[in-house]
Image (spheres, rainbow, N blue to C red):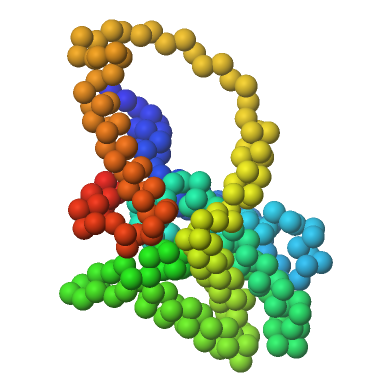
Length: 297
């Protein structure tokens, strides 16, 4: 019988990379909630060390906030909607692309959204009159979704009994964000101009990334190499424990029938993904689209 901790560990081990990001976001939200209650702090102060300031002079003192803000949420509904979006968009994204590509778009979307937020508040102080702080994963999630909208704009997305093209939804979301910026400028207290600016920054990154990828250029490779380098710096040199190997008569050359089936399925998926990267999603046959959809499930 496995222990509860082992069961939780096994379940976490089966999560995809974006689901792991959801777990981290929820964990940080709970830490902020506990700190706020224990130390009797306002909710806006419990995770202040992660919030991105609107001016560059403050940002220089906490440069980690350019990514950290995307993991900070103060309100339950804020994190609920962001993580629900991330879950469903993440499943769509990872059906087509690998985990590293997802991380590239996610983090670059957060960075670009944060930079646009600070740039606008710095260059136009008379328009964005109040100093502000940015929190939430919305810009990163926008980047993932707009990436999909730009990469396969004619893909249908079903809403109840009718279908909509992805690019219709993408345009509607961007228009709403533009109106959100305008409303925030008119009413800085009740509005959220900074948050909507970050959304637009993430959307621009997602759109540009997808369009460049369709041309054969992966603009996230430099960021990916930088993250790999940093990750390698923190990797410990751990020796794997010796394992006792038991021979199984059901194996051929050390592999079971299930291993062969899994290999063949993965090979077919790789061929389909390679076709997408060269000719786009619309070049797939109906059978290939159906196979990729079932594999994603």
